Image (tube, rainbow, N blue to C red; front, side, top):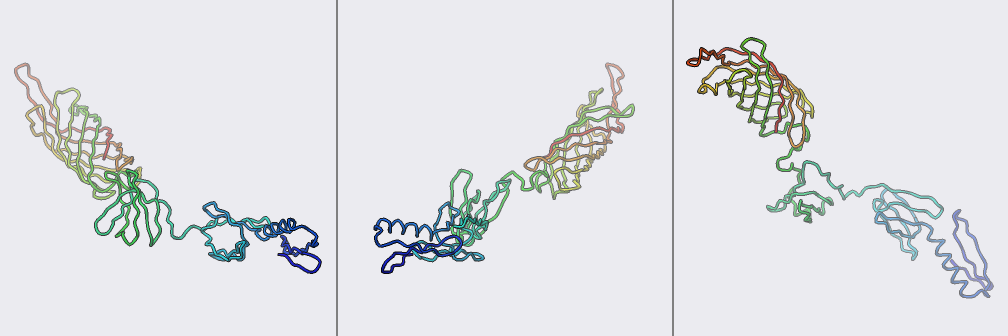
Length: 330
């Protein structure tokens, strides 16, 4: 500020250590010098700079930094208040800096994109699916759909806001144990230990239901191709399956029980089938898994006797085989 007396003009200048310095200037100085001193005085007073999160800088004098607010005085003398969450940093005139990391209490972070989507149920019957890009509590939200359209709603227009899995995808990524339909395809090779226990390739196709992450029940049809005989067996069976832990990698046990038929002999029934398996399930993407196991099979199988070109006979017996199985569940 300026002070006048009969002989001099004094400029009162604030400096960093808050002392006051009076600098005299005679009335003989030109008006240009006085104007220059005016700009120097303004610069001295506006020693603090508030930098907002938007990048805008405000020259001001900081009056008070409270718990939630910052009070400051502008160059024209106006006193204003800013919320701390709107401020990035304050550069003080004495060289100090103060950073602010307070988050906005109303703006929620953008939801992560994973195997689920945001669903807005609009009053009275509208439904919009996509990704929420802005949500101001009690006020409004914006949601972007898969085709890049953006819809804005007031919160009084929204009935409820949920997160739901994409169609055909699981929100328990990687476990391969989501409740619902369970299909399984298995391939394997069985080796026999006795004279009647023929080595064979096997195929199982199972359709079932996953009741929870640990238990499923299904019904399947299979094929057994014997190595050294022309017979092909078709077992029909129920499949009980237990997964011990709900994680991406888990041990499992299955039990197949049913009845076998001989496709090369008018689908003649050969009797009871029992096939337990123990193994490990590896969860993959979108509620699928790869199963690797060690299996045992006890089932009726044919033993064909050739009496010549004119006659042959097939007598059933019980076979016992062990082998490995690899399967894909979906």
